[in-house]
Image (cartoon, helix red, strand yellow):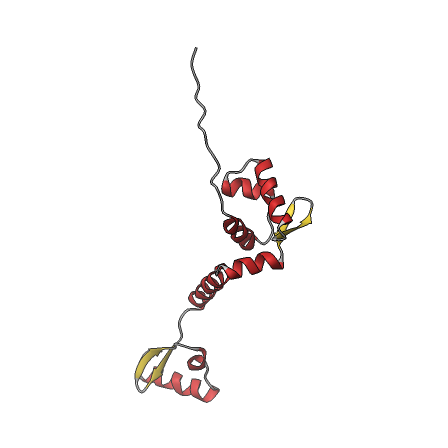
Length: 137
């Protein structure tokens, strides 16, 4: 007789803040989402969602679909999670936009803030002429 050993895979113990952050990222979650992300059983995931609901941190939108409440968002804000997420989004947005270059006293520079990126039409025409003169366009 061959003895088969089962691996004892315990779910990763997720802190409340981890669950709330996951729900914040996804906006709407189901028990299946928690099962996939944190290794819960269906009943374990459903139990965690019920606990968070009883604490007023999440609410059920439709059967089996949950989202954060204002209290849940406030908890994330208190722990600094929302600020970090907003900073990451802003950083990604800036990277996606690329950098804006301009000429200042004959030197090419990178704009550091929005006011440096704004040009009037006359300034843009002048900058284009300078770039053409210097062979950069």
